[in-house]
Image 1 (tube, rainbow, N blue to C red):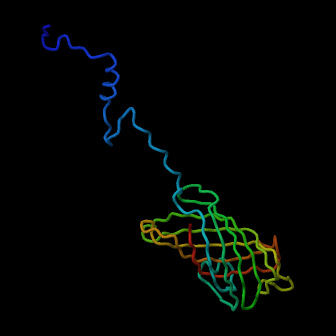
Image 2 (cartoon, rainbow, N blue to C red):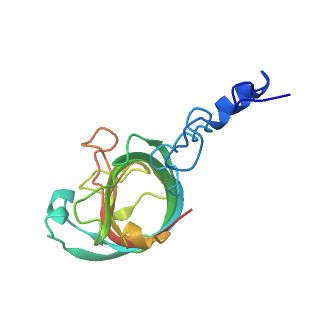
Image 3 (tube, helix red, strand yellow):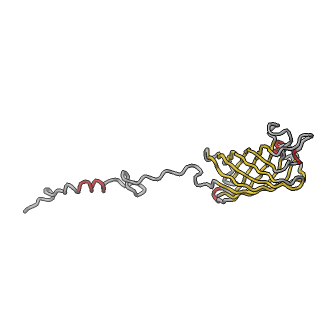
Length: 217
């Protein structure tokens, strides 16, 4: 039998689909274009960040209003506290802002010697222009506060201090930049049991200027 070149050569019909697959262009990353496996969806913002923490802080009573302390006007008195607590992220609005919840217990000594339990919901702003030098966050929160004795430093005139108040906290936290991530951070906090402008109590509140340490996990 004579053949003239490849004129009479024919591929089996079953080979055509296989050749079509092999001819599919290869993507730049080395995986087949039309038949490449889709990449998994990216994790939500903050998904790789620790969402819980434990913390401790201690400080001294300042006989000043909150606004005065924020402008560095302090008149420290011989009343002190140490506190420990737990906190967690309740909701992440974005990479910039979180809603957190916390509960803490504070022991007083000096002019008063009682135990105090506090809870708070707070908003924490996480991004600042200098974060690549010093990772910074700012938080402000409020919630209920209960003292197991009437706090003597919170009495005002003939108004006895109340055991039930509103707990307010204002905090500035600092940590190494994210590029050298650590689970530890330090913070400055104003611990402020408040009468909430006489809504909860007509007695005076109190402000403690404190310094603390937090471990996130």
